[in-house]
Amino acid sequence: DIQMTQSPSSLSASVGDRVTITCRASQSIGSYLNWYQHKQGKAPNLLIYAASSFQGGVPSRFSGSGSGTDFTLTISSLQPEDFATYYCQQSYNTPYTFGQGTKLEIK
Amino acid sequence: QVQLQQSGPGLVKPSQTLSLTCAISGDSVSSNSAAWNWIRQSPSRGLEWLGRTYYRSKWNNDYAVSVKSRMTINPDTSKNQFSLQLNSVTPEDTAVYYCAREGFTELNYYYYMDVWGKGTTVTVSS
Image 1 (cartoon, chains in turn brown, purple):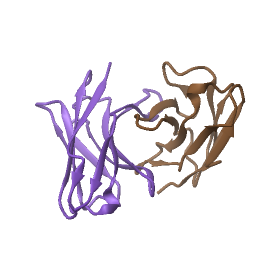
Image 2 (tube, each protein chain N blue to C red; image 1 turned 120 degrees about the vertical axis):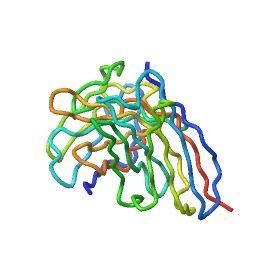
Image 3 (cartoon, chains in turn cyan, red; image 1 turned 180 degrees about the horizontal axis):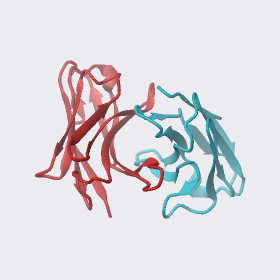
Image 4 (spheres, one colour; image 1 turned 90 degrees about the horizontal axis):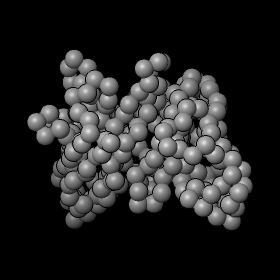
């Protein structure tokens, strides 16, 4: 199975901050990398697919980059509604695997 | 707009079978451009992909190795839904279970889960 490792596991930031979350795959996965936002009690929400493509309706402050084994999710200017847990997921092959999550908290 | 409505019991006894259903509106379980997944989340395992079913001239299933011997995912075309059955459950199967639609791009077949059910909290306990 492909292992996905996110860092940091938690992050405290303020509204307006620029935040970057990284995700590393245990083998090359090309651009088969998705990012999800998950709020407690709600379904995960797809933000970015294919490493850098925006899902419809996602604010432009979210962006994704990377290929191969190293990927990043950047939020350019944090908004109050962005405080949540973020997961990367590889769709290179099954079994699909997720990172352990990055919990973004208000400083 | 595609929506997934989950149903099923929230409490299952150890050694029994966990059964959940995901009803689809706005799409078809038989679609050639979608797959239908089950994922669960627990504090100990995080998000864990369990398996999927999809139709490409015939029905196909993929399962995670960790549950393959105990899990069945079945499509129901008459009700436009799909189901999960997990046999011989233990307390380690306690989790929030999600169903999700998987789509893909026409160029390069990048796969992603773009529509999720709201989740069902399942507790395995006597």
